[in-house]
Image 1: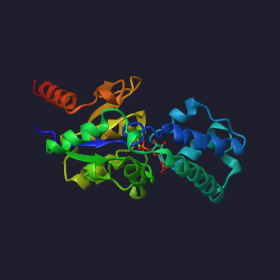
Image 2: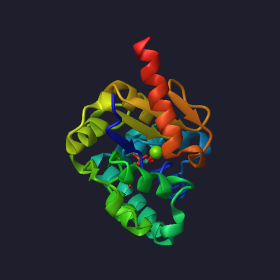
Image 3: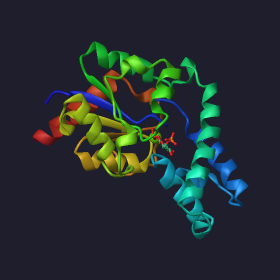
Image 4: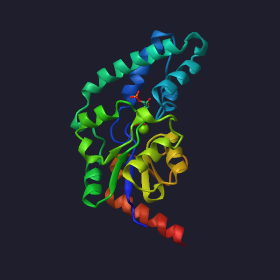
Length: 225
Ligand code: B16
Ligand code: MG
């Protein structure tokens, strides 16, 4: 079976905005008396803005203190801080190996998709100078269920007009790996602690067209035996 498309997560795979999310959430949390540590932050990767807020409030025992309009305000405040910090992104903020891989996928006729639940994804791709290298970006505003639900990866497959079993998905979050696996795509995890990834790599600089091809062929040979 030919590899038809590779579908990328954004935050943590294409660029490292996870720390910027953390700094913005930490400031908002502090303003309402909650201390946010890196451990909680790990649980926010790949999770939508409102669900992230719900988890932060839960971690601080503050779920009852904020009604829906107040939560929307807190989320807006976090997003304003986050968007402000995105101004530091530029073409050199792309993680190692990613630009080269995107170019190689194009040269080899493999579709390229984006499956990010970030509503800021279009702006981020533009700041990185990558928007033309993606054939289809799933629209996060139309997604009802955050990762680990497969919805965003399915939307990317639909937009690219490919079947999930003909695709590889790349993620840095456990919720994202679970979403890819639930779709029936092969999963590549960036980070050695990820469970159930079909291939685990320590960092994006281990990603290349050659390494993905070897992975794809090995997996399909195994399935054929
Ligand atoms: P926004 P991904 C996700 O991006 C982030 O990992 C997650 O931390 C964030 O809460 C979510 O996007 C929503 O982002 O507030 O910008 O809409 O990993 O799916 O690329
Ligand atoms: Mg991510």
